[in-house]
Image (cartoon, rainbow, N blue to C red; front, side, top):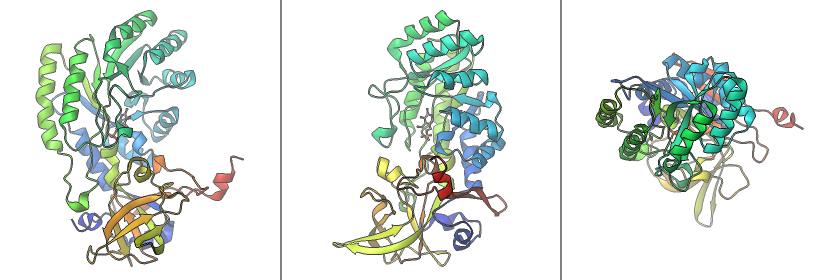
Length: 417
Ligand SMILES: Cc1ncc(COP(=O)(O)O)c(C=O)c1O
């Protein structure tokens, strides 16, 4: 593919130069159309049984994106009280929110209990704490437990969230102890959940994990739901022809596994998944201005205003993001390519967005468009080097451009002192 932006008319006819003239750079730009289409795809993964896709909002918590999820009818997962609060502000009722925290204090658990939000406990000690709080408050007795099935998967060790060497979940060997704590506090276990990791394009590890969780579920009576977690990948190497996650094939292979379980269990509980990245990653790009082009000891660098403070994924996970160059509002064709590293303004040698890439000749004043930045982009952005965080705009279904988060100002940064 020569250009992802052109192939789907990402900006819906808007001139990216005009967008940044109005809102500045660096700028997160989202496509409502792409996000809706991905949310529709995850909502249709299981059709034979009761199923909800819970968008894992850690990927992107912009309130306008949450409102898109709300209107698409999908539910949400939250990891913190801040995420619970923003979901409430977006209009989500408590019964469309699942709280999946780890290592939290009494106040966070109390917030969920007070707001009637079903909570999954991630360790025996958190379950114990939850039991004490629930019995004091005489509510919140229904809860879930996150199981660590002992195996995980993912694109980097840092996103493998199950397995013998991760902090997450309760080990299968401790299931008897789960029952002891539940009995001690009169808690009712209504669901079990897992999340094995992130960004896989081959469905097999996830299908194995589903089968394994369903095996474990057979040991729990009366479950109302079973949640298989998120992790569906997206093609970050799309300009090199990487294929999409095979959702159709995945769906076909998942169904017989569920059929077998339902036959043994006697009924079908609600099945859930927790996709984050898949819903929003491809629906977001970052527009960066190229401020300096230089050569250092034979290596070419394009210095932009998008650094690790705007997008930490390359520095944190060695993640790959495709980059397209825009000049005078048009994508520069991928011709006369030469090797160049796209960097940011942060005072760190790891402040790299795209390393040693074959890109068309880059000039000062060009825009670099970083693709697939809708997930774990702004939500992981920081003010490192005392740089205000960027603005976010949405290209709406009708093609209009809407500011959905204003740029942070220096006054915002000074306000805390
Ligand atoms: C518990 C849990 N659920 C869901 C997700 C979403 O994962 P992904 O964005 O890979 O779909 C995560 C992300 O790490 C997670 O920790």
